Length: 109
Image (cartoon, rainbow, N blue to C red):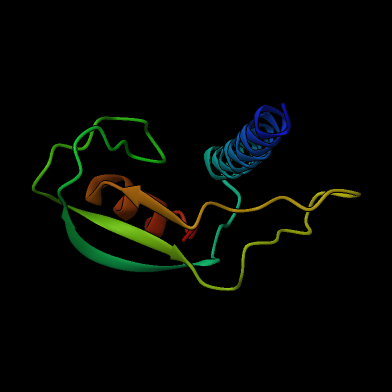
């Protein structure tokens, strides 16, 4: 019986962490799409080989073997911009080179 309870607690902890990460992604995506400056990431231009990956800004599918920009979070994983709530940022985000160029011209990145 204790083993089942431990597994349920483990699953709940895992699902809570996934939900918190997803909420953080949604929060950052909303800020990004509203035009706010998001400068907490270090950017590298590299190949993406993972199938099913999507562009963070436009939500378009990124084909495997395509060169895209990978943003790696630089300052830690806590955001204190929302009052009374700290929200984790995604550890890395991927943006197509077209979206990256547009966002760079808008001085968002």
